Image 1: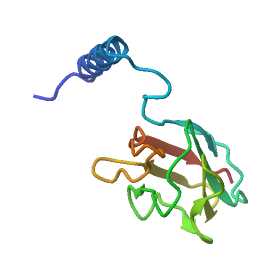
Image 2: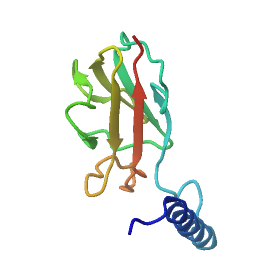
Image 3: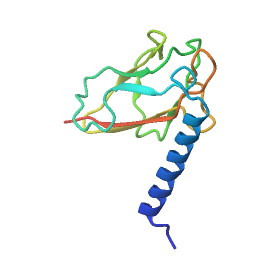
Length: 138
């Protein structure tokens, strides 16, 4: 018997809410919170990206360790963009991946995922995993 997706989603929301309440009660602040992705280019969920876009850009909420500390995780060969240059940090918060995109294609990448959690802030806290998926137009 397959689990009901709505019930699974509700359970996850409740668990996330409980974790958030606990964290707030235990002195969570912006300074102590783990880093998160605050912006991506292309935008997550976009379905009209120009295939001539030449980079994927990720901006974090905090200054990050920039000495070869990153984890871009491939879902599959088909959904991972072709690299077109050196991957790395532009500055302490901006990570850039030069890419060559194809028209009418879907791309999907994780930034930190499971044990691959090398995106870390300068205090060593791993960034919350972030899933980026977008589509190029014709």
